[in-house]
Image (cartoon, rainbow over all chains, first blue to last red; front, side, top):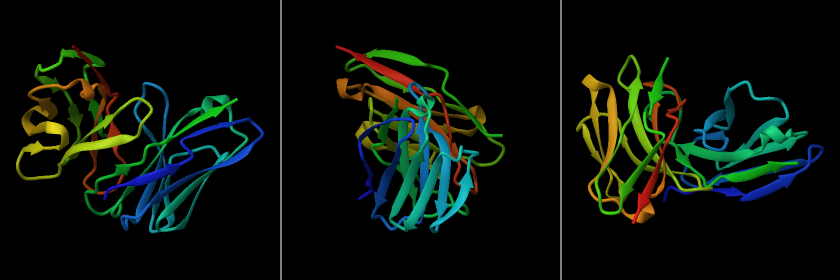
Length: 115
Length: 113
């Protein structure tokens, strides 16, 4: 089973709201990723967690705050977003990260609209 | 720096016709390569990958891809396209070490009946 789940599927929020995106995998993977994908563009890496520690932050604004409470769960906390942050947010996981060739498996994404 | 080029933004093929989607990469060492497919509003599904060994790799849904080091290419093929193959296809390259995939811009496939 190579399933990554994401909730919610859709999210509409105002610029003053606080919301969270959730991602889960039960494949025993120890690396998890957040990507942002704008319409008609490829995914852009935001964050990488390796063994529950943040290993890569691609200079993402602080209004995006990732959290990895355990090896199966990855959250993305959102606060004071801008309309240009509207996008599809994809979560991915891989067996490990950094030292070997790994395959990333993606979830279905959360479609975020910021009003 | 690594880069991936998918020269075709859109491709239209007739149902039942063969398909080839092009992917060229720029990478100094031995890359590892992926093809993902994305239906509208959905996540990315892994079609196939090349890490090493046999340069012709088979994937899901009847797709295959051939790694050609001399041409820095990893083209995706399917002998007979079905209407359900209409989607966007992304080629991606990964480094020898690390986990930062570099994606191509994507190719949108349209299938006409």
